[in-house]
Length: 502
Image 1: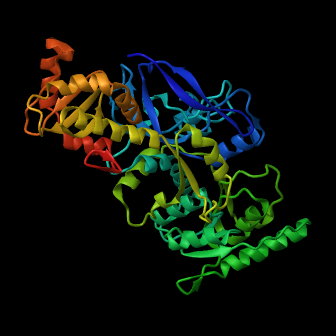
Image 2 (image 1 turned 60 degrees about the horizontal axis):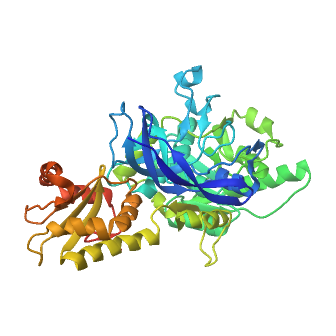
Image 3 (image 1 turned 90 degrees about the horizontal axis):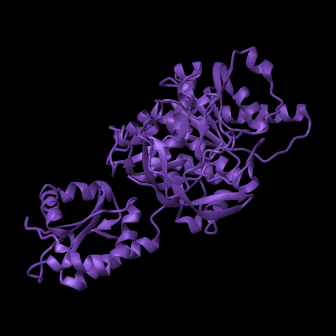
């Protein structure tokens, strides 16, 4: 097992992203190497991109962003038995010390020794996932079921934040819930409340289109449009928050005013929303502090203390990935379709700067909402290469090659005979005429290949003599035991027809 050269999107300053090459060593014994295929852009990434800092955390060296990611395993360390090459996985990118009291209690998300990809808090910075591949401890890499796509796999990370907030709230079935902020985090918190059996969910935001989206797509039962106002004095600010809380309380769900809620998920970090959250929450209820705003805020603490309204901090997540993945795989009818949050998609490294610019907008140029921007690693150039490779095979040997796919460390070419009586020349011509194009094709799947294996439709096989007599028997044996339908479906979960990318 050897290392490789990878490309990475590297932030050198505010809005200064550059594509650079890096040496990636072979994975350590307890690591796996993952080809990153889908990455959602997060608010913290956007802060780093825009300001070269996130709050009071300054970037001190060039850093790769990205941490909401999924991909395909391309290599495994010698000690790894839980994953194999070709597995589709979601990445849990925080690495705690695993030795402190918090880690031993299961609260590793607040470990002081935490290293988190795309965060500048630790130095040297733990580089993010907007690169071709990364090596990551297998313990923090979670296999995705076949019915969970890589894009949904990338949503496991932000959905974990919402599920961790739900757990911290100890949310019970039948609860009434208020969501302040209808961005991606707020919508995912609404989804977490829905799937946990909340009786009613009300969502509030200054953007009317966002709260309407939430209701229309099943994330919330009712919407409140927050009036734009900028009161100056403390008295005016608190009066504004009380009025907004009253407006929220009067909002009807199924003909009944919501009143004070059991739990409020505050997802904006805005001072007036924190004040409103306290006033909107019933005695004995909880305010979940998820949004990261100004660290110094004026809050009506007596309104919380005298009614025992708990203010509960939420930071990232712990022990949530398995539950979230299982929840996505189960297709729970109570869970809104979180994939609808992906409103814009960008492909490849060259489009990443535009993706970040879009992530900072409320709407795109066509008037569509911007909620979650996703960066994929299957661009049109590689898609065209895939078509070209198939067409080359057909023209070169009169074959109808229906599959060109990656299995483990090998490239498999599967076809059905049409006119060529022997087929032996296929591998030879493939090696000579289409090797570089197929290398790019396989790179899309996340690995290089060592052999080219051919399988014909009627259980007859021919292996090119280019590989020598010693390899022929081994490759033929592999081919005979290969189930093309199952592996093809597993590795290419959509967007293909008869083996061709659509």
